[in-house]
Length: 272
Ligand code: SAH
Image (cartoon, rainbow, N blue to C red):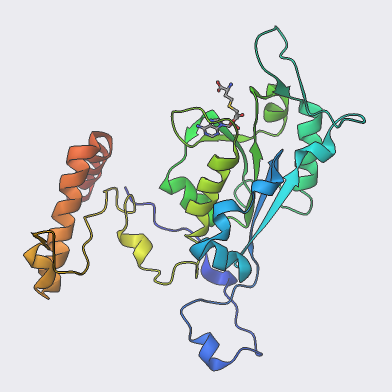
């Protein structure tokens, strides 16, 4: 199954003040940044790993912007309480609906309420598993707002009221949504035009065509007695492409029977 980008690249703009050399660079000049607004009790952990490498450079260049929204400032009373004990009893604390609502209202100021243009997401182990297709969809939006839970989670009523999209990083339980938020923002931001040096590299990589990626090799030609598959040094582009494709199929068949079944089903469609 293909999840080809649906993003319109119409945001790319050229300004008269730019020098021709800049206009011809690999990275287009973006008119509006993509926005990530993150409601969290730990705003200081952002940008975290997103401040490094390609996502960090794109953040500095204004390709995207990050706004952590400190949930604590919307808390109740002198102590800015954000949580309370669960109705019905049990362990732990639950983030209050009224407090989270105030933070979300703040985070959504000026943002379009059309969810395709601006998804509102709660990071949650109960959510739909995050995948590359979700990253593509989000990268085609103008931005998104994320709510990071802590403790036992969030009062259900505020999730229902906002019709929040629940998304999970995987079938395990984290102590909070912040790591999941950073992982998902990373996967989304790298799909924005101009973030990766070589745009073509998102078309070949894992999941882009429903397959895992073939193995990579680089110098030295022989390392620890191990050489590079001969076809890769042949200089024959057709054979290299065929080898990569068959390796991608082999790895997917061996490691991910779920993806392999989907791939075979889609391939059947194409042949029909
Ligand atoms: N009691 C909850 C777990 C709460 S973990 C349950 O059993 O489902 C505390 C917070 O961490 C959650 O509110 C959520 O925001 C975040 N979190 C935990 N695991 C996550 C995962 N796999 N994906 C995304 N967010 C997660």
